[in-house]
Image (cartoon, rainbow over all chains, first blue to last red; front, side, top):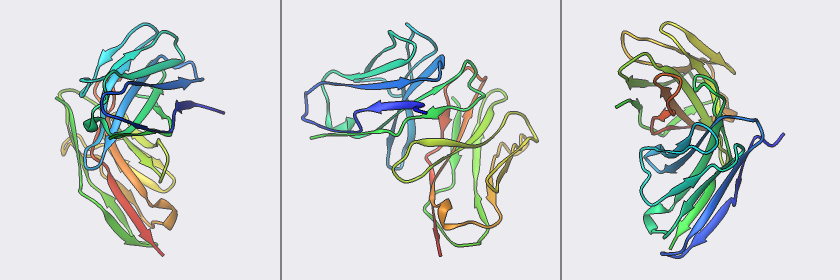
Length: 113
Length: 112
């Protein structure tokens, strides 16, 4: 009963380092999303995908790249981490229609020092 | 663009008190409205939703009614429990094919 799984759960990076966050879902959902959660800011959309091989920018895409090579996986990359990217990152997925429920992973807490 | 405004928190209530968390929205069309809940250390999970005007969503004793005339979707519960302590997010999606837009969240603490 996995649902949406994010790896890693915690990570500390030095400024300028790169890393990839992995999101995997086993529900055969078409849509996948990456959000970041910051105190007092709620959740802000970074990038999203409406299907395998597609990606689109959200509200705060700068400094991030994404790929959806397989339907079940959605990767979020940071090419050169900055302290402003310290945040909790959430991946989510939903079926064809967004009027239905979105399922969230448990989050990745990233600290950039 | 679309936006969601929630009341500022934190909200602290005694057990069995009545809860209201205000949510208003701005949208160009006819959005679907949602309340999500985030328990400590977890991701968000859907609490309830309403997809058209005057619909009432309900779950676990929580209710919210889609009010188009006031562009509101206030969350209510008649008697809160300690286990309801969490962060509550109001959200909308415009057409069903656009990503969720979230409010900033309201932290609720219920004390025994």
